[in-house]
Image (tube, rainbow, N blue to C red; front, side, top):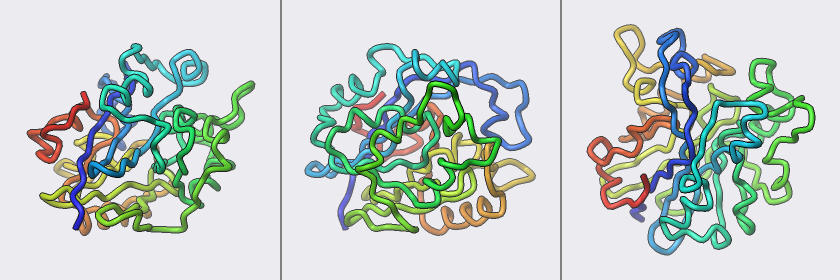
Length: 259
């Protein structure tokens, strides 16, 4: 079985951000800093990218925010720092099509973009609570993912991308959200994106084993997703938590050169 290395890149920060947005029914009024994360997955020969982060702040803050991104944290600068040429990347997995995960797609000039069919449907005609997140109906703005529509690989369910890499559907936060299950050599690690935005979502509390994202489309689907994660992953990496960069918590990150 192939063993892959995971490198998280910090692509700007949502702050101040109300923690209750990420933790269903909990932490109202608690302000946090929420990093936006792009993931590099490599075996030394092949490099796969998960998500593309937000647009640059000038565009992102026209409809969202507050989002800040210093020059050294832009997607292009972050990729260069870890030696990844975006023009050489063949595969980018878009976990879902919310604005903060697709803003940098144009950086990858040759890549094919993997997305679930259900997510495309949701992004074109979203439920009303997610219209802004998908950038639907915003005057003068088209969703950034539309610029790479002609390079999308549309999936219908779980998909083996390569030995040791499997795309898993994780519906709940959105109808077609997906993650990447990565064989690390010390067990399978799931890049879970906003299915698990914070470590707190996975660790739960005294009333819930796992806590759904406060932004969600289907809590029944979410419950099934939690069970799927438990069955398939030894490690679950959060989508907007600074602890995602901690090699003590996730020992397969030791030696990674991201933030």
